[in-house]
Image (spheres, rainbow, N blue to C red):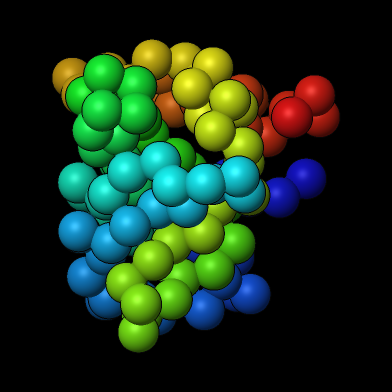
Length: 115
């Protein structure tokens, strides 16, 4: 199983890169812009501001969902559809750092075989 909390080598992500403000593309279209990005060992992720797409909500995407980072176009392509992202566990800004239960729930959802 893929490590959901690490940037895949094929993603072309360069450690230390600033991803805030990059556009995020699901496999079937645009979902928003990066509001926050981390490269913490074992819990790397991006938080995406979805704007009007899902009524201004934020979603947390583990780094393992990232297919490719295009530094030139400032776009991040992820390996999930809009519906898969919309159906993910709700983003909780108070729990996303340091709450292992919450992180495991997100990791299970994005790492599950039904996606």
